Length: 260
Ligand SMILES: [Ca+2]
Image (cartoon, helix red, strand yellow):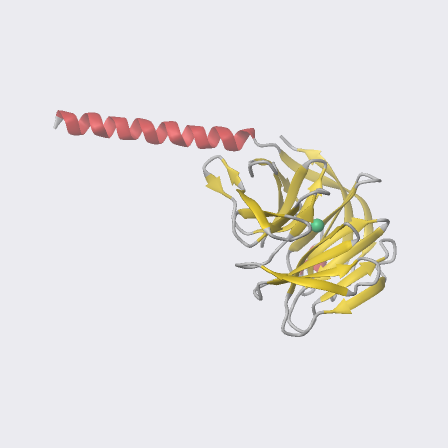
């Protein structure tokens, strides 16, 4: 009986200790809100799955079967300057632009495409296991999300997987990591079906912060058949951060504001 009591006390102590530890780590992660710097138009029919800003233009990959595209767009007007459609059997996902090529994933077809950045001519395709969700790159490595807490690191030439990191905050894995962006040495990622972006250390997947983007759309706009927040693009030259969502009427330039 005495041994049993000691075991119980020990168990209770360890539960308290571990919950304090988890709580402590969670509290230490910075939380951010935002200020809107500028509002731009966004195509209401674009089911945004990938977004990047390169050379003064937006590149956007859109999804849904029979409606998936790759586009180049004018930021100011939202006008589509160049566009190709994917064959109807493919649901387009993330895109990234590197070395004058655009890479685009598909959701569940295990195949990605590589296009010439200037002409959008298809140069090659490649395959991968699992699902394709988001893409980004740091100039040397391509990062790919797949709907789990894992981010795959790909060789930009062969598009073969080099290693993986797991997005985590303490002991908790952050699942359904979606559209990605490389921002000043960090990976930013939409978390699917939330209004939040998670800031990730690319080295080991540690969560560096959370950005709450609730309230970007008005209540009226929320009722107009829009889908979730998805789409982050960073303008290196101008230090501008853009966000939008699937079927959203607007694309926002935002500035992050530390909450705590
Ligand atoms: Ca992006």
